[in-house]
Amino acid sequence: MNDVRICILVADKLDEMQVIVPYDLWKRANFIVELISIEKKNTIVLQKGIKISCNASIDKTNLTQYNAIYMPGGIGYTKYTHPKTNPKLKSHLTKDFQNQSNKWILANCSAPVVLFEWNLQNDNKMACSKDFKDLISPNYSPETIVSSGNLITGNGTGSIMEFSLKVID
Image (cartoon, rainbow, N blue to C red; front, side, top):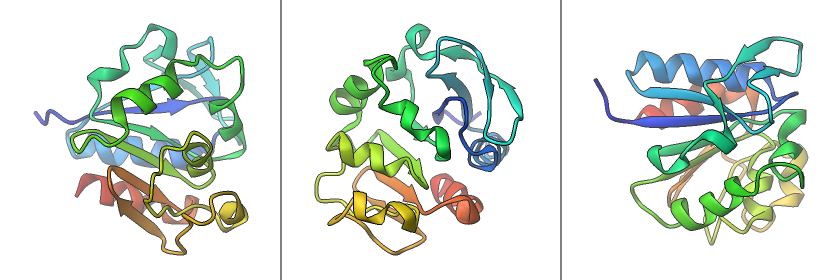
């Protein structure tokens, strides 16, 4: 069994493929993958209406146990920074994940905007949806997938397979 542990942070209205495809591929790679709700509930309704059950909510989870934290995109990405969202996430990513070579922050599509807002990118380049490139300038990269420092970012749903396989590599 592989000792890689990945936390997928989920919220209502995130993109189905950006949650389900990485989860499936990472499980097939024998990673330990858990769905952690950033909401106060364990059942999440994704962007197109698919309901998923999470292992736990963020307020009941020790995030330090994971090698990587993944933030999928979709219209629900704003919930990562919503004032009602447990501040544990920002604090943990800033304190425990930023600049640590053995810990990874993964974000796709619109979610890299959150990393930029929280100043987690340092000088690292990041991919994101072209719709959001102005929000992360000057760190924006037009590449499909960018691995820079301890960040792996992708530009959207169309590249989610490539993104997931890059994480496995």
